Image (cartoon, rainbow, N blue to C red; front, side, top):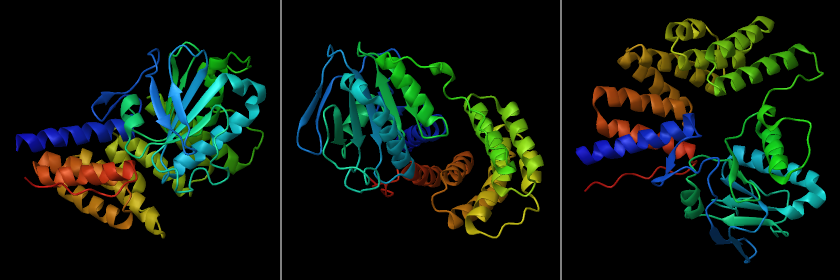
Length: 345
């Protein structure tokens, strides 16, 4: 039983850090590489058969991009990076780019470009996650940028609205390319010229996500409230606000917000049930929360938060086996991999 509890704690740590706080975690027992540390030396064969040897002292900027071939976020990140690379032109000679991909043969990532790696560009199959373990990667996509002294300048986990501008600014910084944007401010949501209601709502939602990422929950809630005033019928804004209420511990507000909401689509119903179940779990109404969350995962089998909240319920109830199963299901969705059943000893 003690061994199972230790495994459970490990799963909780990996899941909670990897999905909900991706910047500070462990993977395979190794601490995530941090800003200011030396990039580990490594050697790997790319898809063309040539070997990429990264050694200290080369005097070049290195960008390592960790992607999953079965993840839409990774495909979007790859597209953003491809556009960034095209802008570099002659400056690209001072840069090595290594894409570490769990399955480069899926076609989901590099479907619009040939697999032949050019000078300074390498696609490295990492099906056994050796590079992931060396760098301590726990989520995809993740971008690591080092300066010419082989020191980590920036780590960018996940793919959000600020992904492309932040990566562009940090890459320019590493390569010494002059730019008008302060790299520390590159992630701020910029005001666009489009003044339609839809565009204004989108700006409020983006700003809310940015504020939430910085831990400023109340200002984020205010942004979403402003968006709701513009369109009280927007389910997307309502769901974003409901989840933010849960994150902030304002559980009754979340329940009241979702109460009476009319949904017709399967995933809309799943998200509404999730928010209510999440809030009820935090309010201590475990049985009610369990029913709601079980219905959630029936409607949405990839609901990471749904499985995670179920795990929390079973953990509170002392049902270690069910908790482990729920966390394992959530973890399988995080890495978009099949569930591996535990072997009993």
